[in-house]
Image (cartoon, rainbow, N blue to C red; front, side, top):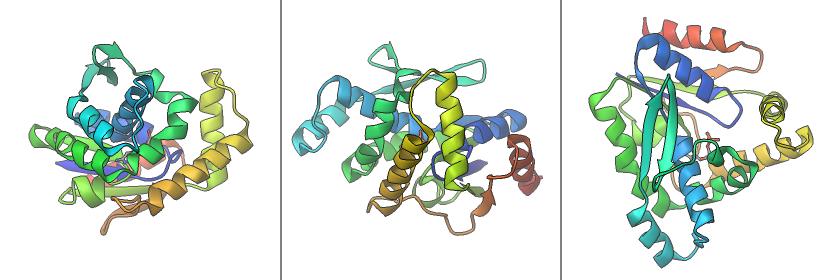
Length: 216
Ligand code: DC
């Protein structure tokens, strides 16, 4: 069985998808991490992703390795662990523009679909229910008010000692929402038949229980 969870940043997708997977004994797959790892690698190698030839050469070589470690995923590119490095504000600032490239998206489709082949899977991203697994048995679309999403991200970053004011975070979130939902290549949108859940005033546990109740 495949469960897709899509929605904008700060709606709780990652924690909720991990919890649902844990409770069901399913695999968990975070596709944002894949776009982030690619962004990190392009930045590290100073590749201009707007240069089609350079981008294609890089995509042909790019390999992401994912290891499961005590219920969490660890990510490696060319033997370097990038689990933390892909969450920095610098990567976050650039990822949406790179994820909007149709060349980038095409090159990652098969890798993403391969996760649905052997396993019962909970996967999260922006286009899981619309493009990657349109045949998924259960589709969820999460939303939350922008100020709630910005506050959640602020608290997360504060914990990790990453400096940014709530206003800066809100601006960055809105910019990313705009880029993700207006791009031509599989934009962020609610899939047909996806269940819409507004997480603004709900705990993680409440959202997880709603999703589980839709299966059982
Ligand atoms: O969920 P996240 O914040 O880690 O995602 C990082 C970026 O990757 C986000 O701005 C949009 C992009 N993304 C995407 O375009 N498609 C996906 N399936 C997952 C993420």
